[in-house]
Length: 204
Image: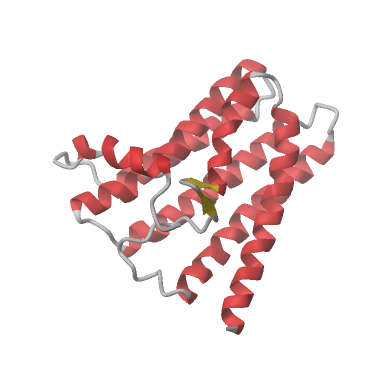
């Protein structure tokens, strides 16, 4: 994308009060990861009320995922550690989300297939992290201080990843299970897309 997505532009404005604070970008990354893991954990209980809170927390964490990069740029604190930490945080967040959803739906009609789908989604998230790192390396973005750890196709100010924001209203309206199934399939398709992209770049 030639211009930042809408959520990143909003994050750019919201982090301005932190520029003169002692808060560092890497601290924000860890804090965001903790929120994501907490939200995912609530989804593992199988309780509807917990799921509502968990989905909301996870969406908040995914939005806040843009804060660390924007703060790093505005504080001029970009680093290779932050670059890798951002990727690892994203992989752990999505991996935990799929695993916890799988555990939470084991007692539903999906049965053990829920856990299998959750594990597949977790594996896809981890594999995608490595393939996206490889894509960055092939495109020489690994050493670009202004590059975000994104690796997602986008259009009109929105990225493919922005679809995760829908998990909150979908959960609140009671449609989390079909969303989980579709998201699990989507994660596997995205993983295959990153693998294909990396192979194509290496051949080129």
